[in-house]
Every structure is written in structure tokens, then in C-alpha cells.
Length: 472
Ligand code: BG6
Image (tube, rainbow, N blue to C red; front, side, top):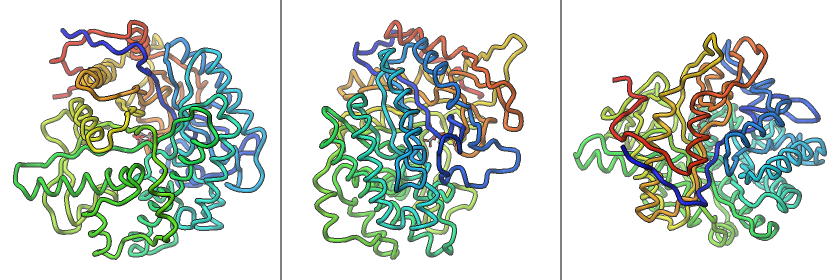
């Protein structure tokens, strides 16, 4: 049995995002965003009600207080503040987050605010082609200015953009549907470059407008091992890791592309168009920390064809093929391999490369769950997953990594990226299914109580050898 301890200022938290929990997608002047207009699969819940947090926010924050978290990571919906992504500010939208932030602070919960989590204003897509245009950079900059000016007296910790990797590839998030396959393949990197410029502008503004303000990106870190010790697999893993993670993070931190990846993009005629004046903004504005989201590790093997169609688009490449980590436990929803040690390895990789403090802003266990007759959710597997990942956090801190905090994904059951409510990550159960909104009542899962106790004690005891989530 190991006693896992944390520094007294460790930021224990939970995470959420606006479109996945708020609902009220057209209420109080909110405009539509790409995640509202996307086509969801038949029978899957959409953003109209989600977890109905917009109407349960007070009760939800009291649950956070009961859980004892030190920080709460949530996102602001861009189209609540600017319904069209530009133009007039919606006062009711501003007010909603004023109330939320004030309530959190009343409970001594530090807000950690994501400015943009997948929900691009639809009007910016219709009018300018979204992130393909520099106009969207200007709109994001204006939005950032409003957020920092309005909330900066109370919110000190900011996240610029959640998972650029997902936004650049997913049409559901970036809204770009009018290009052919070849055009789209190139557009992906133009969108990425524009998002990188936009977030640099946010870093600059945050430092200018928010006293003691800190800001960083939230990266979907892909920790990739070579599938074998064959040097060609080793190189494939390097290619994949650089392409999927370091390209974005190097732009965020160093303001430039990794050389190998840039040459590849140029050779394939995929490199984005840049302007000479970008150099100054890219080079001079650094983040204060790196936030990263981590669920599993992956393996890559040598490959030169066009990778399998069943993989998500960002895993299709002619320089590597992504395969599950067969040495790790897989489950119904965690299909690539659960790897807690890999999270510590990721921290080491990130710190060695960037020498910035780190925050884990998402990490969690997905399962299909139903309330028992006694209104309980006995989510032992989630507890096991959290325990073993937090154990690695504690080890990383002991090894000298400046890890500021850990926010579990997710606070409430919410709309999953693609699978709605059939796939749940919450520490709090929300009583609805995809096709029946029921009473939307909240029920604390067993993991809620486990997490509450760990936070209270600032430590917990774990059997390192026991993997409760293991189906093998
Ligand atoms: C991250 C996102 O990619 O992963 C979250 O930031 C998302 O918004 C989470 O919910 C889990 O992914 P999914 O698709 O299982 O919900």
C-alpha cells in the first residue's frame, strides 16, 4: 500500500466545458456556435439542454464546494458574450458568468477559465470561413479583451484555446464543410496557424490587462511510444508526437514550427501562409504554464501508405500509423490503452522541452452508467483510474516537475464529444439519457466521495498493483 501525498498548495480540481453542460443554447440572447449547428448522430443528445447547468449553476457550484475542490475549470461560451462572434456584447451572457465566478469565489474556489472550448461562433464561419480567415483572429482578440477587462479583477488563471488539434481537424468544431478533400487537408494547417496567432494575442492581452494574470494553452497531449524497438517505428513515433503535439506547443511557447515537421508540411504543400509581421507576435508572447489533457497513451508504427479510414483524421498519416498500446488495459470506451505511468512520462517530456509549470486540465474515465434502484453509482473503475493517475502526479512532483494542479474530467456527466450521454465521465451523475431528459437531478457517484476525501486529507492510500479499471 502506498500513501500518496501532495503539496499543500496543490490545485485539486474538476473540469467542464460550456457546450457540454450548459444547455440553454439559444436562451438569453446566446448565438449559435458550430457545436450547436453540427449534425449529431440520430438518437444522440444535442446542446439544447445538455446537463442543464445554465439553470442548475447554483446547485452545481454548491456540489463543487461540497467536493472541496480548490479550482474549477470551466469554459465561457463565446456566443453568450458575442452572439455573432463580433459586434455587440450580450449583457445577459456577461452576467451569467459574473454570477458563476462570484459564487465560486464566495466558496474560495479559484476559477480556471477556458476562453474557447470547441464552440466557434457560427456567424464567423458563415461570414468569414472561421479560422481560415484572419478576421476570426481579430474577433477572438476582441472577445479576449472583453473577458480580461470584465472578469480580470476576479479571474487570474486563463486557458486560451482548448485542444487546437481537435478544432483544426474536426468539421463539427471548425464548421468548414465546403472544401474538397485536398483543399481541406491544407486548410487544416491554415486554421491551426491562425489559432496559434490568436492565442498569442490573448497571451499578450492577458499580461497587459489582468493584474497577476496567467495564461496558457490546453493541449490534447498525445504520448506516443514506438510499437516496437525497430528504429523505423521509433522514428514513426517521433514523427507522430511532433506532428500531433509538439507542433502546436512549439508554436504556443517558442513561436515556431519544429523544423522536421515544417519541412514535411512544405514538401507536401500543406504549410500555411504566413505574413512577415506574424514573427513579432509569435516570438514575443509566452504562456505562463502548459495545461494538458491526457487520457491514454498510443503507439505508432512505420507506415508509408494512407492510414486506415477508421482512425480519427488526425491519426491518418503517411509517416506513421497509430495503433493501440496492447500492453495496457482497454475498455469499452478507453480503446487506446489506459496508461497512468504514461502521464508522468508526458509531464517529463513536456517539462524537459518547455521548462514551464504544468497543469493537468483533463483526465478521466469514461463508462456507460445507470442509476441503481437505490440511486447510487458505484464507479469503482473510475476511482481506480483516478487513483493511479494521481499517484503518478505525486511521483512527478517528487521527481522535480512543477505540476500546479490536476482537474479531473469531468465534474458532471455531460455531452461527450461525439457520443452524448451514453459515455459518462462525471463524478456527479446527471439523471438523463440521450433520448429522455428525465428530471436532470444530480447524484453524487462513489468517485465524488473518494475525491472529496482525497482532497480533504491532501493524500490517499492506494494499492499500486491493483488496477480496478482492468477488464483483463
Ligand atoms: C477532450 C475534450 O478532447 O476530451 C473534451 O476537451 C471531451 O471536451 C474529452 O469531452 C473526452 O472526449 P469524448 O469525445 O470522449 O467526450
